[in-house]
Length: 46
Image 1 (cartoon, rainbow, N blue to C red):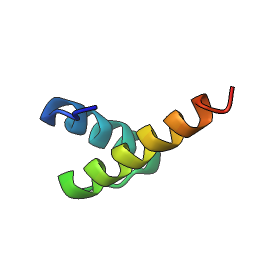
Image 2 (image 1 turned 90 degrees about the horizontal axis):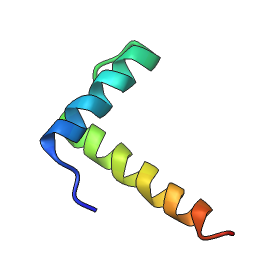
Image 3 (image 1 turned 135 degrees about the horizontal axis):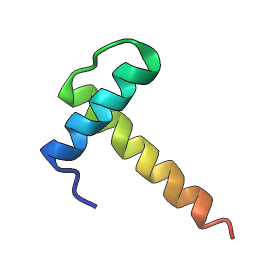
């Protein structure tokens, strides 16, 4: 799955809203990829 710049900007906005901190695009990309991966793992448990 390819994460677009728009996706990253949205992820950054949500992160800031939830945690009150801004994160870089690099950190947002890493976190988003990890979130996607763990979601895939959980879904494969069914």
